[in-house]
Length: 202
Image (cartoon, rainbow, N blue to C red):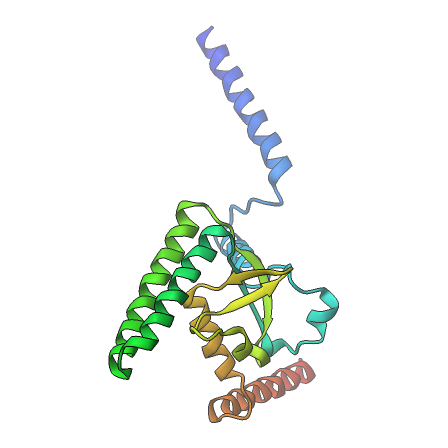
């Protein structure tokens, strides 16, 4: 009797497993290499090639690939309050201190602002809005206080400090009029030539 019950339980489990596998087989890869590839593809889709909400596909097509910068921006009452407090303190600081002290205190304020920014996102579960920026105009996104500020639908949104730094670095990298950008352009052209050669010889 116990043997029959054990068999029935086993068959039930197998049926559940089969139905589950049949339903989710396209989402689950048991093979180690395929599973790793699937995770990589999902990561790229989620963090690198997500669909931005601030620009249409037609406008995206007008931006050359090397100038497309995807990131997340944040807004809301608490974020606005943090930036308003930071801007006020920075303005007062710039009026009352000498240059060297101002640079030191400004950096300290930026660190404190970024910490509050991250805490607001974490504690209030503020979700970022996926956007795309054109790196050719990266300087126009930086306000007088060194903060990346985006105006969208008549509302102000902001980038995290680390993302702002990444945007500035990437902008400098693809600036073809600079030495670094010139090297980057040469690398791109070399890669294209290799790809064409490989395609012809295949």
